[in-house]
Image (cartoon, rainbow, N blue to C red; front, side):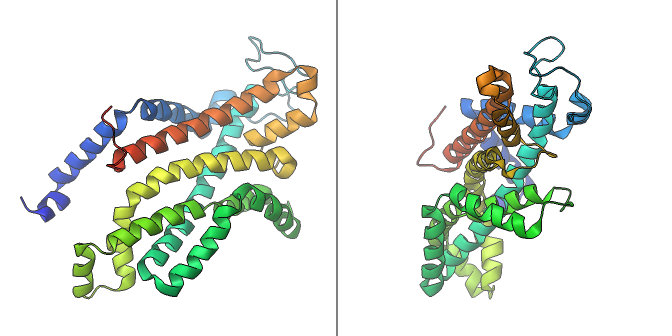
Length: 310
């Protein structure tokens, strides 16, 4: 059977997908990560059905700082809001910020890394020096410096794409400061792929550079981009949580980081209200760990050098 038949026939494609799923799901970390992630995605998708509308100080249903009970499974906060209600609604905001920021990061990192690796020369030198700057400088530090300045210019009123300006700015800033890791990996893979025979055939056939990168290089880079994208999501969650904890989030659309910030400002730790800090903190850790487990399993699945028979 020819190579083209194996690559493009529906039967060959279906067999490749089944083989990938069998290897990927053979890792215990992948199974744990997927189950945990699916749980939080479902929670984030239908918060209103699960716990009702987001509670505020006006429609709070409990007393101040009530410990977990049958009526309030995760207790209440400093203004009587149900913590379970806040955490469930916060899941949508935190995951939305992390996923959208990751999309921006992957697009930037893939474009810059593939361009540098394919063209080489001065383009490679200048793009890699830019990448080195963002790689050495922690994305959290850059985001911490840039976010307040942009918010001061834009203001906090109104909405942008359904999000408050503070959250929209956090998404863009995280995405534009966390792409360097992806760019370096994509560049190294591109340097190897562009020397392959199928790239030479595409050049001889008259394909343009853009066509070669999009139609021939990019599909072969998708596995590595996906594996590292899962790790980028975990990093984005941590950065968003840190920024929100420092007061750059939006209390009208509270993420898990914002809930931690509000609890800290209200003195939840000194008052012994561990549930106000523990609930959103555990959620951040579980979701981040899920993406790390999935990312490691994808890397083991796609990378023959790391592949271990489960």
